[in-house]
Image (cartoon, rainbow, N blue to C red; front, side, top):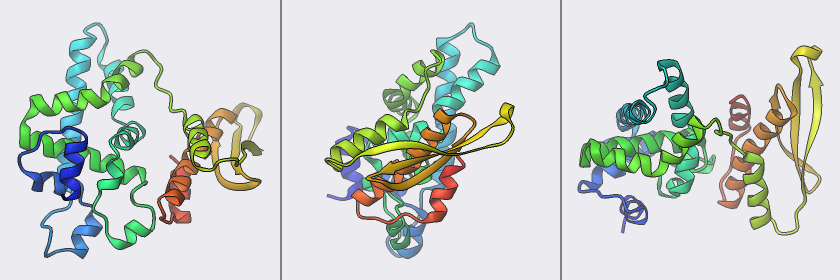
Length: 248
């Protein structure tokens, strides 16, 4: 059974044309390296899926909250469809395991990259729309993103990367000790920038910057999650990707 079919069966997603879902899970690097095997990567489906996702969340907000204005609907929608939310949903679906990646992308941690996961998820939505229509893709989107709509409206859309990191360390690193340290403060009192570090077994594994200590720690934890996930899955992560993620 191929990976795309396993993905659909595991997540109970109806699909008639499995070539569509395979395209949705195909990174451009894999398509380039396997031109005789695959016709398309997931970039066009991602474009379509992004539009389907935006429409779905807009429609739900419009019907669910008739009293809120356009500005608030835009704010709530942005929270729901942002990369962090989509990456979390992709983790829930174990989507990274089923991606078709080129060799270089595989070796540099492509299965854990937030951009790859969120883009592929949008491509999956685009493929479902083409294969099953809008009513069904809306049902699937709300199955996995409905709780985030509720959290956004309630003002509780907070990404607790620190807790997720702690859970990962406890489940995979046994007796390891982890802590957060503020290693630098700079800027005027009214505009301070803090740098936090994640310390695992007395070794610094990531840093993050923010306008508060809490924000800096969350950013450092987000990067540490990606690094440790790669380590567990036997891939590598480049310094460039850490620096890029540090600015998100």
